[in-house]
Length: 136
Image (cartoon, rainbow, N blue to C red; front, side, top):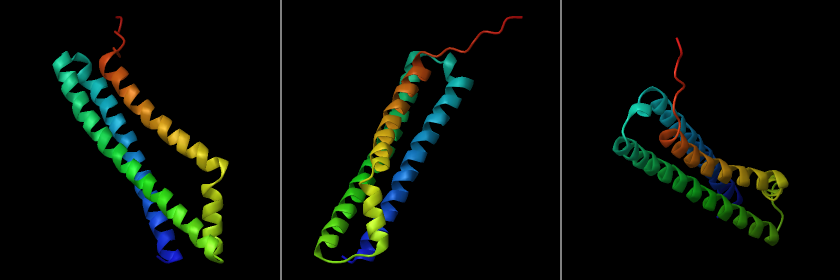
């Protein structure tokens, strides 16, 4: 593969990763809104059904994010191998520098932490949260 193709793969996979994370967050907001307006009064079988549907979506988007992350890592490794065989463009140098930076590590840790926090918060909101009762 050429350097330009690898950079394109990297950019496309990064876009897919960001979209999957955005969809995970949107899925969580939809669940919270559903709980707030409707599901806080539902019985346990209904809450379990909703949670299973939510979990299916979470796994789907989480898997998509994982696959995109693997593709990003593969493209970065291919770019490193290409750099070792000869000179590469400034774009590739900057991309590889950013990929190996502290910021990239923080991004990956935050991404995984947010993903786990989303499913934990969904469990809490769905099964344990109760709205405040209004006093007259």
